[in-house]
Length: 162
Image (tube, rainbow, N blue to C red; front, side, top):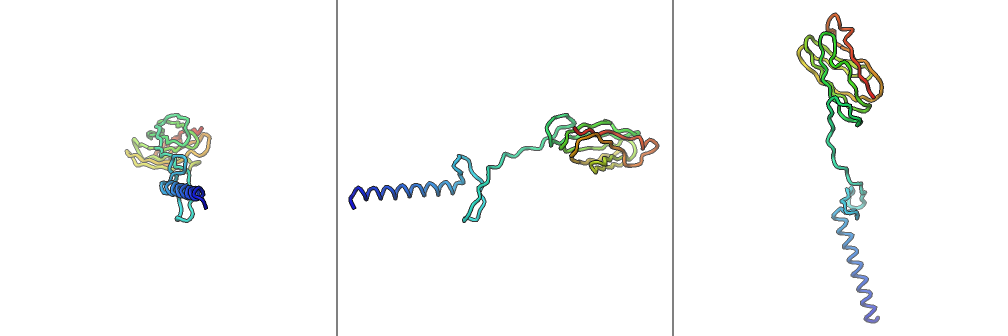
């Protein structure tokens, strides 16, 4: 073998060694070659590369608004007194998490929405809070589910799910 052939073999070995070192460094840093770190799961023998996780997002709270975003938390305070709810109508979007705080001004009252299996009760002068997901569109009646006197049957309101 001539000197030129030895140099060629040595160059190939050096290039092979550099390539292996580059793979080792990339594998150890978790870099997936795109400039971003990849999430890897494995036992060292075989690995699965997962896509990068999206940044965490804070839950949105939109008190009683008519925001068009789906999946937000809509909070309402309903005052119950003298056989009425105030406000009498609440409007949300399908998929919204609805958080209701029931405040009683006089005697014990409650609120029930059959279609969402929602029931909440509060003693006289107290409040109670509950949540449900408005999973289906429509207009639904809510009612007082605690007997509160002569006007109990007329104590109703309306939930509108767009």
